[in-house]
Image 1: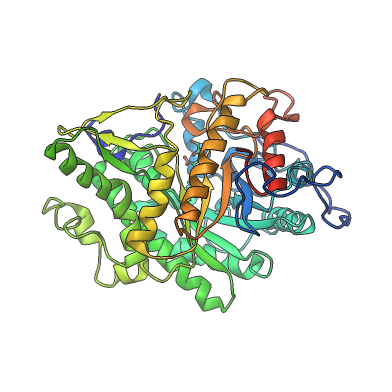
Image 2: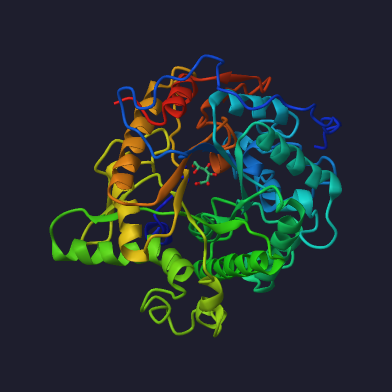
Length: 478
Ligand code: GCO
């Protein structure tokens, strides 16, 4: 099963009984990862700017588990993963990495890695079981424990508000196909700004709306499992509208936090030197990148994108006067997620030119990250950037030298981009922990830290040990 397709091609084609952990005792002042002094910065390698935010990422449904505990309501992913045939082996996120119960253990692992930043997501239906209305205090407490634990360890929390887990109660009212969903999201976002905004300084609105549109609504391999391209485009617009309304909601609170979207972007290249391939690449670039970047950063869909839709396409009516200005409400940062490039032929087909990984869609091309970051600066200006996802699955268990090589190359590409003037402020590896990889279930291991699938015991992989050194030196070895 291919989890992630380039959009155009895709279109063609039990309640646990454990209690919440108690409050954590006071932490000692954050210290070096190992107790041994870190090597001199840049001893024999690349040096990143002082204060560079070395981090790791996770998302709620993929790691938390405790799916029916402490009043959490179901999300579309609970529903979807429990339906036959949707995930490999029928896997679900019921227990996932059991992060909900092991949060302090995981916080200590983060501290031992020396992480400067941790990007996680809030489960909307854990804090608002019905998606709207009164907050579920027990659910919210979990995020207080997490955020307090991060701050006590000197790790900056970066909170994502939506990582694909739409509350089922809102899905039952039409979910993202319904314009109201954008406002429901903004209301939830504002509740989080008021609840956690004195501790969380960086907020990400949406994670990868493009993937929701392509896999959740076009091919149906992700929740909510819709296969309707027209509905997908409408949902895509409402997601972007939700982003803009949430940015406004933060401003309305008067809180200082920085906010932006997390977009997965793919540099698109013609597969050969033909004019046809160049034309196809420009067209695919609109779908892959500009359709998301332009409204968020320029307040306008790309020229011709909306007009180019069929006359009776519902998305034409969905985009109302003023929406683009809302979507383009000034962001403070852009979170970039980079996995793969796209090489496209004159016929519009896609070819693979570089090695792939266990995830067959992940074509390994670190130069693509350099091209992407410098292009954002060139076309969209100097907005601060942080990478919130990059990584690979490895079948090598804890001896994951392939992941080390992958990350080293991508860190080097990021470093080159910084030297070329890109305002890149952080790099969060996907992922901190082995976790629930959506339709692939637990068959792919993306973590720096191994999670035993039976006991959920944690064990640092070679990549984690290596990353600890990278962070201590503020850059990878050469
Ligand atoms: C995504 C998601 C993550 C994935 C990761 C690996 O980018 O699809 O944000 O949840 O698990 O990308 O596929």
